[in-house]
Image (cartoon, rainbow, N blue to C red; front, top):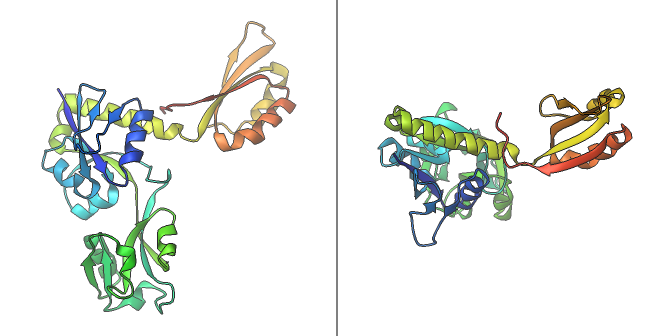
Length: 289
């Protein structure tokens, strides 16, 4: 039994392959091939544009694939959402589709764009957004380079952004957020009803979520006398309650916990002051909740 898995080609490709590597799956993409190899005999990979992924999953050409929630909604197709995977091209956060206008324009809110031209790749979602506000506009599909179109080819754009830097570089300002999106693992409904395929897809989802949850976190273990344990626990901002284990010397315990990596530099000196010893920080590959 093999599953056919769609990997998003384009801006998400490198981040997705890196995520799979952290999850334990090594994908090898040749620059000219749309069929990258993977070190799992039960998976066949294919590179597909994120905008088209839902179509090929829904039609059954792919059993599962990774794409943005925005493109699933835009497609209007029926697929199974297996899990959300909050990562993007440059960050670990969600992306936004925003309504942007030229910096020196008179537009301050969506209502100011009545009877104007809006350029975007996300046509259906944009039309629905303005329709919900009862604002008549003309929405035109943009094949790319959307940021350069205002004010000559369009009055405003709806464009995806993580940081807003590209919009600012093109002298555009954001006036509203149309929607938020994150990557999702989606599955074909027939494949999802097939026990063997569903189990494999669920296992992939488990490993990908574990890799995402481990990002930016580290493990910490230390020893402390029982008499000082409360002081140490008070210092630790744990993901869950720290694990406390008895040592051979009954006056001492071992403490194991998970921390955000950014807080370690502040926490370690406080642990030392609380009389913790043998403090070890170690990297995490996956956290499975």
